[in-house]
Amino acid sequence: MPIEKCFKKTFLALGIFLSACSFDLDEKHFVLAEEFLRQGQFRRAIEEYSRVVNYGKNSPLAVQAQLQIATMYDQSLRDFPMAIRAYRDVIKRSEDRALQMRAHWAICRIYMNKLERPSIAAEEYEKLFNLFGKDQKEGPEIILEWAKAIMESGEFVEAAKKFENFRKMYPGHKEGPRTLFEEGQAYLAERQFENAASRYEEVIAKFSGNTNYDSLVGEAHYGLGSSLEGMNKIQEAIQSYKNALPLYPNKKVIELKIERVQKRSKEKAF
Image 1 (cartoon, rainbow, N blue to C red):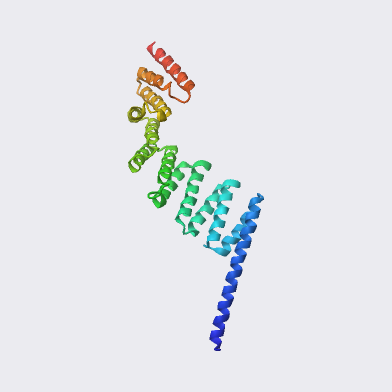
Image 2: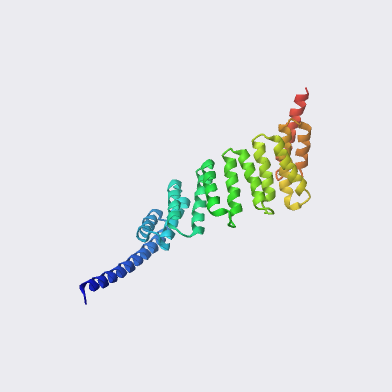
């Protein structure tokens, strides 16, 4: 046999052998990592998962190991900067769009709920929605969380527009009535009282009498009262608060509000 062919066969056999060993080694480290995870030894689990990632690169097992690392940093160790880095590595390694979306969404929620940095969260939600959310069933949930992040960052008018866009994009969605109310809340926070009042009035007009929306209508009456109070229409505001009483989840809040506004009204009269 020519020596070139002999070398080729030898190298081919060696490659197959090394690949098999590497795969077996990946599995062994993964199993060991899982055992450490079950025992609550998170740092040791991360060490073993990291070995799987280093050996496997972009293999499905390596991606799964990287996701486990990210989840541990996020939920168990609460090391959120490291969790973000690990989730970004999942996105980079994986070709599974559903998994990429899951990892990116986790990053959004870390910035929003755990690091309390809503402006950065809003930027991440925008990327998430544009990359994954537009044509996916998760789109409505993503855009709602995005709108809330915008709201929390103090961009109230932008938040109002996002809630309005939600209803245009997803007509008939079960969260549509709530977004109309939230739009009113955003305008109220911006002190655009007339815009806020019109949204609350629309909620009241559309959903009064439907027991499924009693609580929402009660909140809308309360919001309308706050808007009217902001416009210095005190008697109308008091009436709106009174309209909220039978429906609002916490009647004590309304009673105290009416008492305070009535007192203010009397003091102003003098």
